[in-house]
Length: 205
Image (cartoon, rainbow, N blue to C red; front, top):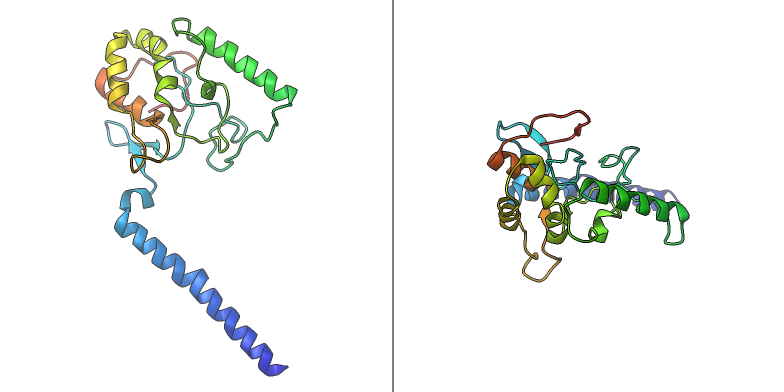
């Protein structure tokens, strides 16, 4: 019995050493060498060099001069990186349907110059609530509002969007997409930051 206990303790200690200490250190070290920027959080900075977020995590923008991301159910006010998750409401939920209707009405009211209905991703939250990307179609749908708020021709905004489209990974994985935070930062760099207005977003680049 004593011998078996000794063997069990040794195996446990060795397993803890390998999987709890050695493996994390090696994986972290390799990540720092091979992908240093991503390993440190892929921080995004504004023109002054100030960190304003991570390009891997979505954040809310409510100012008309910025592109808005997908709705978020992560945390009380959405886009909370410590509370990643969806609403857990199913397709038969009346609460989910009502929320979608309200979001759709709000989008149409805020985007009177947009063409047609908004893409469905602007009405529904992602599973994580922190999706940093939108499809090109969802970004382009918002162009009239952003162009009007910044007093910039729509064609110039569209050209900037098309220059920020990310292709499929390895040419086959995923879909073309636009990082909303990086796009909003590019807007400020190219056209200047808009004047702050009453009720503007607390999160902004």
